[in-house]
Image (tube, rainbow, N blue to C red; front, side, top):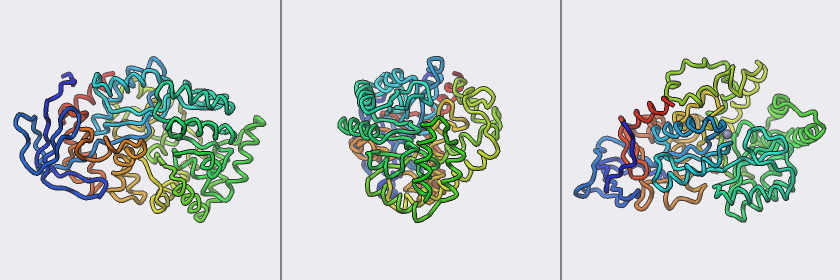
Length: 458
Ligand SMILES: [Zn+2]
């Protein structure tokens, strides 16, 4: 079966309970009418004559979900596998993804545009294009930046490609270059997200204009420690002298001097400066899971395109099993991150759900992982409604795209997920997917299953 681009003139989901993610409440017995990829009406009446009708009785309708941190990468030989992987997101109700940098950026830009133009079925893509990194980039495909002028030039290259944000991946960076990058990006209305340079304090990065922090277990750990100043200074000095501090030592020293008061002060600073955070809790297991989780035995493996799945092989992939001591310390970092999420939520910091799924990110099953992330955020202290917001309205707000995305309202994109159970009762009910609407196209359970099977054939 081929999942095509055919589009009914009018699609309606009848007698369904709409989840209002903003208010965290349910609007029962509504009919949602969609035309030309948009929601054209929400009524309590019958669907219009001639519409393709889906019976929503006893079911719940949520906005299409966003995974705000994924990667499309792995070199030219992985392009087909990455393309197939996009199906896994759709099949899990993830109708939008934010791609956070890789080495097939030109292809990703083409996919983004083809999907937007209705020429290709897939989740809506926002992408950073290539990451910005230092002299010795960690990942292939990154743009190298070693000073302010290069930083401005790199942002210029991203703007020319119509990137949707700037992703930083510097382990160390001087403040002048960071400021030059953020100023150039902000002039073009692009947000700057990423890893925070570890030679700077969290305050330094915020003052230099960073808009968003990824990975709570790394880059917020420093700001929650009274050792932050001395550790970051030494991290920079040792990197410059060619005797770099290991991540294990860095984390050990920060964890040993963790302070709740310091953490709260950092949270207040993030909130005041409207800095977003994508905790990526589900990805906390990427490195410690390698070699610990049996490769090849997960039932989901058969749906993951081979070119992606093989990159997770602990014997062949980029990530190898870590030492016992690193496994232990990463576990502690993950634990701290869970506590930080609670503080961030209480402190009013805007949170995004991102799973970090993709090539070379072992055992983070694309599609499934976004639901796992929402569950972990709920377990960390968010309500079910708040967890749902991190993958819907918050994502739209981040991109200033609330006119078209993030909630179920007239005029917004016809990107929806029909559930068999109420996610406001239990966020895990987002996994009980009956069907997905993508750009006005109805994909029933059978079509979604087929998308997964097709993904696994690649
Ligand atoms: Zn990532």
